[in-house]
Length: 99
Image (tube, rainbow, N blue to C red):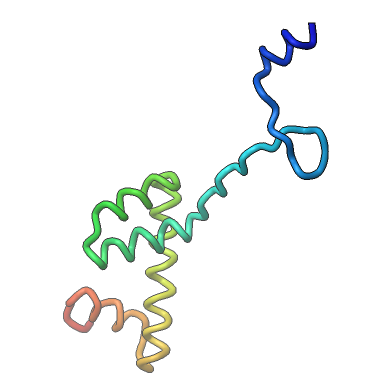
């Protein structure tokens, strides 16, 4: 009976710490900010394959939120660096006339 049960369950892989079979580690889920950073960087580097891969990591809504947060942080960092307002830096980055 045990032989039949073992055959049904498949071979056991020994693990380091006991009699349980070792399981492969589940892949770590991607963070929405990792996905946003990868997507934006891929777009900046004109890499559509990397951009498509990053877009699969999270939902479109989460990616949009992450990209928006990344844009806000980037504009704030540039504004501080340049000693200008975030509004003027954002307009400059988009090639818009100053308001």
